[in-house]
Image (spheres, rainbow, N blue to C red):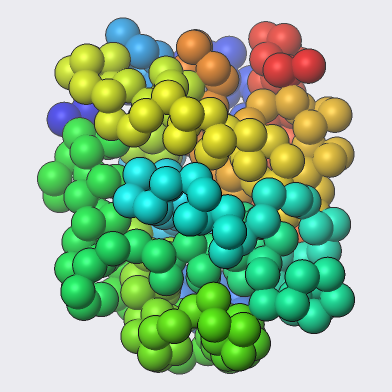
Length: 311
């Protein structure tokens, strides 16, 4: 289980500065259950390989993973199926389009999504999770998440999953479009059930930072010494975080911040600084591209202060 996190005055200063940017965003109310979040919230946890952790803000507050789960499902599927199988069905290129866009599916490679971080690609990835039922496949993904956090109590938020399932018309449309090209071969409602549960896996900032730390350590949990995922899988996932992790703001993110990161519409951001630590951020007020407005600023301040950019 996780040890207690130490509050950090340095981080508090950065959070206070970044919080002024939350007023530029709004919470994701198109998923009704997410619309209840407080737009002024902003918190961060940083997890070190030796088990130390520093934080600022209310890091115990629960968040659902949403699109952050796309990195985790990709890691699992790469382990399940291998690179050739996965990338035959989903590409590796950034799109420059919003995360829920259908346009490139039609114009570039019919039915083959450009990358696993857009919804179309993530749905194809989730479709590839091995198992004989939605329940078995979801439990395999959940076990993988629990192993990275070292917490067997992690589960999903049923209210959020139901809310997403009932309103996921666009994701259903993407699935049917891809199914036409035989890349998705299962019942669309079954896949939506699995995908909405995946997106509703719930944890706090500290948990999120611990997952980031496992990626930072090339798939090893330094506390147990266990290789949770192969080095190559961790590398591929981190590369996608740099090129596609922040939706269609990924290029700007690489220039201004340069830390592999993945955001979700709940306001979560998971960051990973190779060999050093994992970062978990929560700030539910989103900018127009679907990224946490306070969270992005916080990561930018952090990167500048501690010179974290890969580049």
